[in-house]
Length: 411
Ligand code: SOE
Image (cartoon, rainbow, N blue to C red; front, side, top):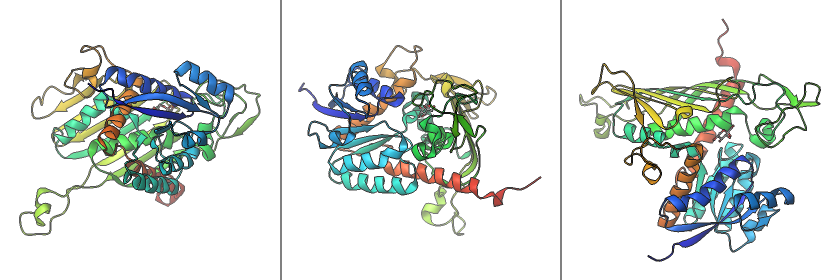
């Protein structure tokens, strides 16, 4: 068998996502047969000492202190963007225009306008065989990929409810220090775009329906935080007497949503079977919650779907299983637990024997597998920048709804 052609990667940023992506680039070819061989060619970061340490720790072949060098280098085939959202558009558009494939962390951008420019650049590049993907990695959690299969197979019947929560608690302490994730000019939004975006993408992808309207409430519980503390990671603690700076994003986001309907069978023929103009079957309705103040919840990315024939429920804090209720086969059994570790389940056959389980990092490795496989086949990876633009439009609609208090009914 001929050696697969190298896919030389240049990564920008080396914090939490840089660590997860480095692990994925290195691990994917060791557990999956790939048509291209990823190489960790260069990592870029502004701080030379920091980026050199990251290169040594995560196994990158060279370093750059300016991401623009990755764009100029002819030994880089793909740029992997692991930086805060305010830098995504400039880096991605430059890389695509230079003929480099792009993997860009979520959310795609900090505004719909930026996301539209990125999507236009991605469409133009794809016509030249240069591909891009947005890193909504939860699509590659086996249990959520199985949930998508079950919905597509009609196991839940017509969907009525989507219930999505993403609950963390790492900001519950008012003295947790300021970080770029709390600065709107860098992160674009708070819990809404950081973790709510995952719920929006997963719900749209699994249901196969886009959100068409929302009604929202945003809250910032802690308005100022200690500055000068651990400004990069998720940890660290300032003191009660530290100087404090303003938090400019939401701490929690709640919103209801309506999903697009699907034409019923008769709609295809243009009638509802009695000659009347067919009405599309109404889409499901949704309720979403994203917060980093749910004390005791660490990474509870949860999704429950209720349909006419069945329901399913997932919680990332129990990520190797999927709860399923099938009213046709077992009406009196209630929800039962599927251990998503069988060889027949998505991705799991490439890892361990049944029941041994996977972790958070495996979603990133599967993301690399699917990206490299698509590029090798000359096909467009998903989620595309256009898929991520749709998520960006929902984020913007949630913020617009929360700003417009007219919908709020006083009691
Ligand atoms: C937020 O704490 C966060 O790190 C998100 O930014 C990631 O996208 C998610 O995978 C884990 O939680």
